[in-house]
Length: 134
Image (cartoon, rainbow, N blue to C red; front, side, top):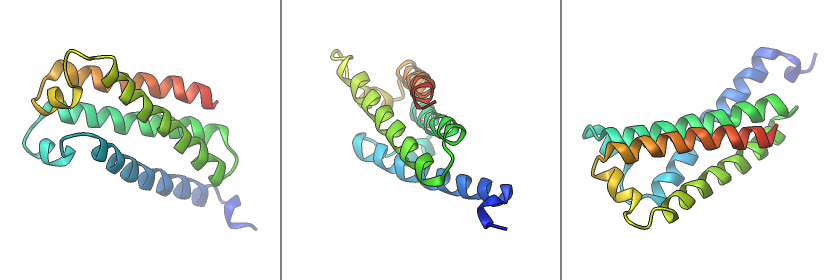
């Protein structure tokens, strides 16, 4: 019996890869923002928590679609990484489409309206990206 035929091994592999990808992708998001996510969350910044939560949900949701549609770990990872890149591009488009203020600065200053919109954009885009992966 091939080890990959065991459903529990397969689930553990997908789970492990997605956790690793979430950590790496959040680190990349942190590089492109002007604030430090976990420092701001530790200070009680609800806006950063909402924006970060939206990113985590978005990444996980993209991988959900990727796992459903791919029959191997490698293709699941490649679809998930592609989906993440699209989510990251969506973040930059959001920043570009709001020239009257800087998204990063507003979130760092705990503007909860901007934090909520950021969360909803990440979640919404993850569904669109996921549907495209499907």
